[in-house]
Image 1 (cartoon, rainbow, N blue to C red):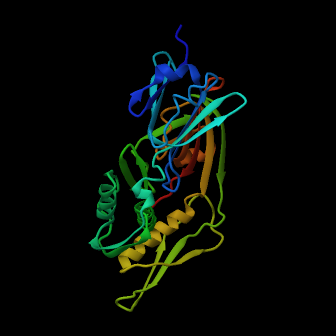
Image 2: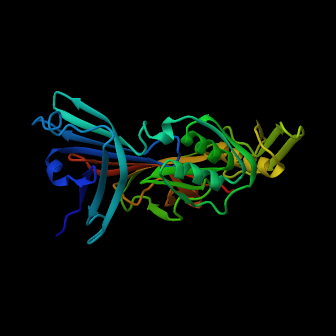
Image 3: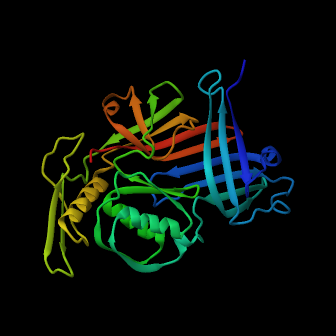
Length: 344
């Protein structure tokens, strides 16, 4: 009878080295995030009792590291799934003893990548968020995968002030309520009240690899409205906008308004900013974590539906963080951190 098992594939600078390194593999950990302030990373630990890694196999920082985890006979006979951990750049090599191990740490965007390193000051006139994101992607050798409906609001002007291009993109997305991540040569941008690919996975309590959970609802620091005020520098008039976004999963005891002062050119832009700021502040009203048998379908940004969790079954969740871990002693496990998607 076929036995459930997981198979790993490791690629170094586009060369498949699985056959050579498998006898030395101790563990693999892949972490991916839906929020751009964190960088997807891949960590592999090898046994180095023969001294290969510390000598003639010594890895080079900046080299490309890839890995996949393929499950066989996993959730039933014939069930096979593959997790592609994507392309990563080696940025750390560590050797430890006793025990003689070599640990490779790799990130999706290296610290020396121009999109992170170079500070730029410039401005765009008569521009949309999509066009700015496209310019930033193209100038750094990435392809833009824009998944936001439409091109975004037409702005009079947008400035990048002594920022790296990744910092500029982070500010742009925060301003208008977008999310983005960099993966395999693409910059993927989507709206933060949506899932990254429109797909949803289901977790049923006590079935299908479920191992444990922690779920939480909190009304602390939640607001029902957001007010944006800004004194227009060129036109010399006051722009004010109040956006009422409503609330979920708690009874309001009082009206609370989030007040911000931010650069904007018109009421429409102020409203977009107010809506994005309110959502950003309130989005962790419903949060949780789940521990599972390894599951390649659990990807950061993907939707999640719970069954058998009472009131939490009513919410659609997004996977904020997915941690996939394999070890020779412990097998393949997945841990995800989630938050409830609020109405936009």
